[in-house]
Length: 345
Length: 248
Ligand SMILES: Nc1ncnc2c1ncn2[C@@H]1O[C@H](COP(=O)(O)OP(=O)(O)OP(=O)(O)O)[C@@H](O)[C@H]1O
Ligand SMILES: [Mg+2]
Image 1: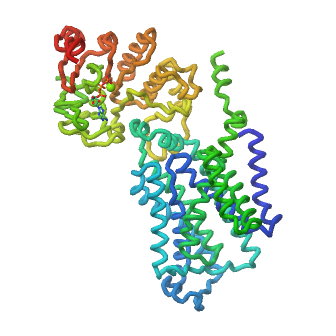
Image 2: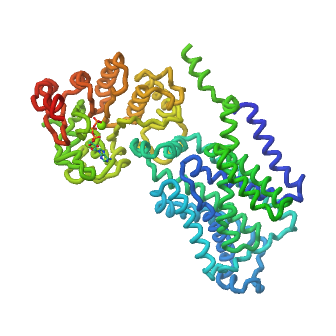
Image 3: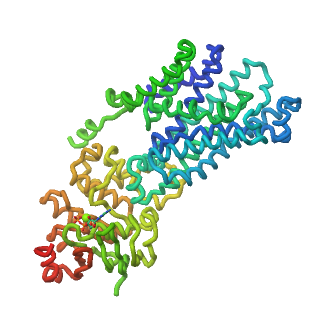
């Protein structure tokens, strides 16, 4: 790593740490920004790096929320009784029950989602291109419907988790740091993964899967592992969201296919598919754009968002990173010609 | 009979009404170089595709090292160490030469944990050596999609060697290669066979090349196995001469 890079990373880390204290009014928005970064980075693992555009990653978010909730509650109460009482008094958790439940619940959410990814992947990775996208979208929609009809975990009414046991602002900072920590972990994980042979192999799957097969690369295995890694982190993000939101319901919050489910894809396209920084930049730009339109163009916010999507997809396919890579290749240490000519001269 | 590595018995394959292979039987000897010739459209590539599991066959049996492989998918067969290059040449155009070589490391010999490691210095050295071997060392950092067709063929050959196959099927390795470089390529194919111990099975249109290269040659015509023999026998076989000169 060059000096500039170290300074860049240090600066970002410093901003990450002081942001919630400098802008306390924006605590929740900042936490959501990290959530967007997490879902964008993980979406790009399959979408950008491996060439499998899933529209169903939101499934892992929603499932993560429910698993975290069910595990946390289940450690103290009977989940069915808890949900049917729905605010009827049996919702007290000690601090210890709260934090242990949270830790175990969020971890369980990640693990459960990565197992789900293997199973769903086994059934859907035979599909290519738009068929895979629609197939995975179908899974997410179906899951939302199933959960809305499952009374044990609250049905269409949703489910309520205990409230953070400290003061409200402290809670905001706490959830901000949970998201930020996960986001940094995902980023470092991806950064490492893309430098391994495994990373090169999933790129090969994206560029020509038939050739990868013909060379004996374990294509199905790598696809399953990649998606299950992504699902692990999305499940964790969902678990954190469950505690942050306190109350959530299946269709609008957990399995929100047309909101977060689509936004994560737009973030990646905006920032640049198949790059490490693209999803981070895209998520940041998108989040700012979204907050501004929601605050200042209320009533037109969906129109503005739709316009952003159309403009990105039609005129800006390679995203910010793709644009920079074309116009400023030297920023990325691309010195194909110099290197080649140095060697030959 | 010496050691047979690929044993094809009575294989047929048709596409709709087109009988691309009819009751084809042939053997590839371990450690040698076997040739496959035949006029355009005689079913050579189809036979390759059948062997490597690229499409299901209509009937017959294909064995690799004694194991029936005719029902196995491409990846499983490749993981047994039976590899092919494509007539149309398939390399990763967006990657440079070195990256193409590294992606060709034998993943079948890797556990998931091995795959989750970075490439070692030895991997890079081997990539460079093999690129040097096919004469692409100077071009190794160029985007492979920008290489000429002939250079891409050479790269695909180097990639196949990187994969350390037991047996390699080459579909027209000299197509698009500058005639002045062909002798060099014949030499490299022979060295790959002798030094790396890779059994070669080669489709070739250039008669001079295949007569120089192979110890045993099969000739297909209209999807049927027409003749088999040493280069001399094939060159003087009236059926082969007819198939190439007239008839078609
Ligand atoms: N996928 C396919 N679908 C339909 N027909 C096919 C297919 N593949 C091959 N064929 C037909 O099978 C016959 C044999 O084709 P094949 O490619 O095996 O010939 P070949 O001997 O490799 O020819 P060439 O020397 O030109 O490469 C041809 O008539 C071809 O049109
Ligand atoms: Mg052919």
